[in-house]
Structures are given as structure tokens and as C-alpha cells.
Amino acid sequence: MEAPLLDMLGRVCERIGELHGEYDAERFAGVLVRRRAGAFAELPGGAEGETAQRLALRIARKQLALVGELPGMVEAIASTLDEPTDSPALRLMQVAALAYLVNPGDLLPDDMPAGYGFVDDSIMLRAIAVTVPPLYGMSAAQVARERLVIDFHGMCIPPAIAPELVRAVQASTTLVQMLGLLPPALVEASIARLLEDPLTPLQSQPPDGMSWGPTPGGWFRLPDGVLEALPDDGVRYRLDAETGVTLWGDALERR
Image (tube, rainbow, N blue to C red):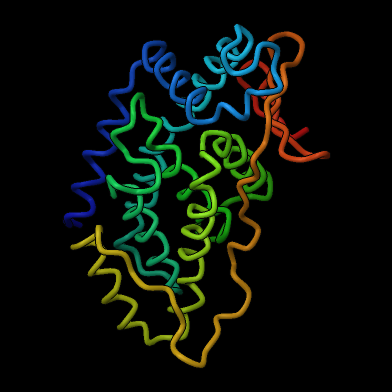
């Protein structure tokens, strides 16, 4: 398949592939501390302290490793676009997520230093997969892992734009409900339009007098958490009184 969207995806994936190890990790860490200073406030010395700087670099290395998974995710999704499925609406949901990835002016602009601007794209693709796991052949363990990654990515999202990202994810998942009520030919036309013009978003509002019911992406959240230093250079992103995401070595855990 040839389409402007796929060409744009190729260029985005090339940019992600050009990120360079420790150099970009240090730059990413600097942006993280500036954009999310509040998350570091409870560490010794606050956001400007040595602990914050050290943990920010640990976090940045892992964030970049997860962003580096995007090209493989894009390839897996794009490879299925020519294959017929039982639900054109689900195919459109995939294409809409890919279109978000190539939009340079999304909530975190893609030209932010060190790949920081691709974190919201990673959240979007993973949220779509978690919302419709059968579409991706995902097991319960894989769904749990992707939700863990989404929460870990969430520490990079400034509180001021977090509600907008939540709405964007929920709007994308609502497309499945909306378009499932329409003739398949109309859905296929929407897919074709996004492939040709990915920077013009689809509308996901129901017609007057109608409701799409519960939002499939209602599980999605981006709480404003805080960071805690743990022994052995571990770090925990505390989401609320009971849950958090812990980075031990290179492994993420829910605790």
C-alpha cells in the first residue's frame, strides 16, 4: 500500500531511530525536570537536587527505550492495513492512531528535544491496543504490561495538557462505537481519507439526539503523580495512595 500517511510514518520512524543513547537521555532528562518539576518536589533537594538529576537520567533512559519501540509497533499495524477484517471500524481506529503519530503539532510537539515529543504518541498507540486487545492478539499479561508503560509515560505529561490527552484517547476509542453503526463503505471512505490526509482529524461526535453510550477508553487516566527514591537506585512514580509504577534496574513493576 502506498499513501501519504505511510510515507510520513516512515519519516517519523527514521527520526526515532536517530535518537542517540546517553546524549539524548541527558537532554530528555533535562526536559523532564523542567516540564514536570512538581513530580520531583518531594525528593531530597527538590527538582534541582542531585537525587532528582540522577533519577531523571535513569527515567529518561527507560522512557527513550520505550519510545524506541514505536517503529516496530507502527510496522505491525501498517502491515495489516491491506488485510480485510471483520470490523472496518477497528481498522479505522488503527489508522487514526497512526495519523496522531505523524501530526507534528500534537499535544507534545514532535520537535521537542531528544524524542520527548514522541511520548504522547507512544501513549496513544498503546492505549488503542489496550482498548481493543483482540485486534492485536494481546494476552492479559501483555495488556497489563502496556497499561504499566502508559502510566510510566504519564509522568512526562505536564498536568496542564493531561486532560487534553485523555480526551484525545477517549475520542479515538469512541470512533469504534460511532462507526460501527455506519455502513462499512462509509467507514472505508474515512480510512481512505485519513491515509491521504492524516493531518485533518475525523469527528467523533454523535449526531443530534444520539449517544454512543459508555466510552471504551473510560479506563484511561493520567494522574498527577510524584516520584520517590528507592534503595539500590530504584524510583517509584506514585499515582495515588495505593498504586504506582516502580523502575528497578531496567524493569517496570506495578507497586
